[in-house]
Length: 250
Ligand SMILES: [Mg+2]
Image 1 (cartoon, rainbow, N blue to C red):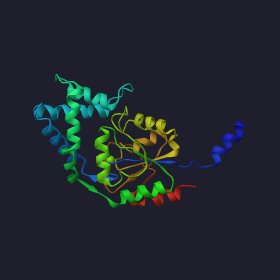
Image 2: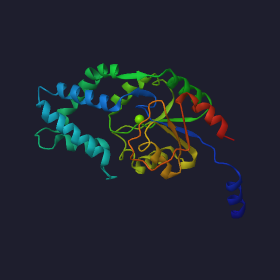
Image 3: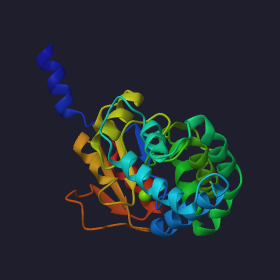
Image 4: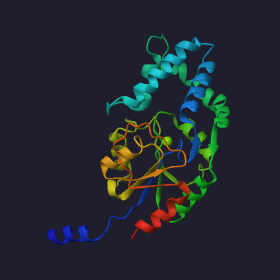
């Protein structure tokens, strides 16, 4: 029986069940560096009543870098972020949470003008949902859920049947750490071969291949900082993803 099982696995191709979508630069076009700089400026303006702008900017940069690079599986990215943001201040997380929430409910929405929605995002996501693919919004989890949901609205993909959205409240690693993809696969109950990662960053998104996840590099808003040794399995425009899947699926 064992022999038979192994033989069947070798003969039958693995079917991709789930598609993991990056958000920024993939479903929602933007100049990431410009967006981050506007975000840091807007957030530091919102904190001006309680912290000097320069302190907010430095704390924010330190907190983002810490959340991006921390490898401790016992701490969520939010815990790392808040801890680093509060370093050197007398504030507690409870003091700052209302300020963050107010920012994301108000000023954050103005950052929409620094993004360019692409019509193919909704079309592609809806089409794949209609084909029965399980969908994951696999954005880099350095933002709270409220901020990710807002950007999904800007991209026009907020109403799709997302099974998981990777938020900083829930995830413990960031791309390109393969631990991020391992945690996601575990939450989905999938092996790497059952998923396809779609993204625009040659390092952050293509590192999924370490887990055996197939990768589709979108070229519409490509980011290649020369820091990647990964090769995508497929590359093309986001709009061409459904036809690519039709060709590779048995
Ligand atoms: Mg991206």
